[in-house]
Length: 418
Ligand SMILES: [Zn+2]
Image 1: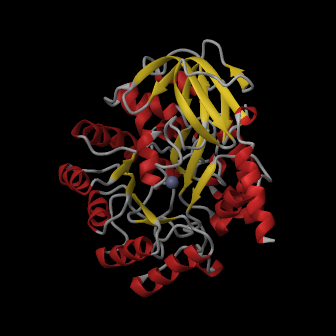
Image 2: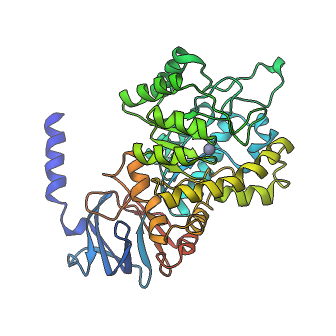
Image 3: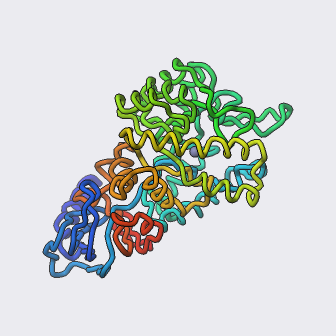
């Protein structure tokens, strides 16, 4: 068996000549690292990977050519904060009647829509019953189309916190799967999530907007609990992400060594300084505010949640604007599910409004996001050795980021999917 396998390998190597090469031609290509356009772009692809990329590269005579004409090529986009198995209606009581299998199937639909929108990689930070992990595996095995997923499974949180089920009356005895109080329980749930396939450990470090009876400004886990969870995640080779709105919770999570702060709505000067010192990524999720406040009635958002949203979301823009200007590392994330999946690229225009150049905004969704995932060797730029995850748009996204809201063509791992 071993001999056959190695001879097959030799055979594959010997035949990996030009016949297996796909050449993509486009008028322009964005160099996301330098924020510049490269004209007369050529990208050579073999199998799932890029073998060369540049201007006017020689194309092997028998290569298959995909000519994108006047379009602009970019690396596939990355959203580091999605809830791929959820949808806006789930923010209210609708979720109670929705089984985990039903959520997983709606995730399959959302994954397809997200990929078609040009997001070839996502980090999913919180799903019921490991539905995101099941979806990740189904996509990897080719059962359903979708982006590459780094998945968290159920988010860890305290009893009655943002990541607990806060909708049911006491007699229902309903508790979310990620609830863990105290160091011992927190370690147990961290390890259980890893046992069932988590790539990243998601923690609810403060209260939230779309939960009942908690305050987004107050911290929920203690420093001791956060250190235990994040330390264990790192020791077991996993990254960690902390949902944190309030200033204190942000600082505790950063001091405990977390890899990213999600939302960051009430970040203050001290938090900004700490995040720069620790090189912790901030994942602002801002576009959702526009959508949620406009559509609250349509999705039957319960009143107490709407009241919180009206206070927190506008404040977040002010504070995150300061963090961006101060130079906190930013990775692109959107909280897709709070607004409809597929509109992820609308976040770019908000980042630009808060002071980023289009090139900086684009870096948050490519090289920065790849770095946060620990996937810099695989995705985030058009370079030899990386997955052939590419998109194309009309016009120049370095002049107008809104071109990214209309992705015309998508390739994932060398296969054209749009
Ligand atoms: Zn979220």
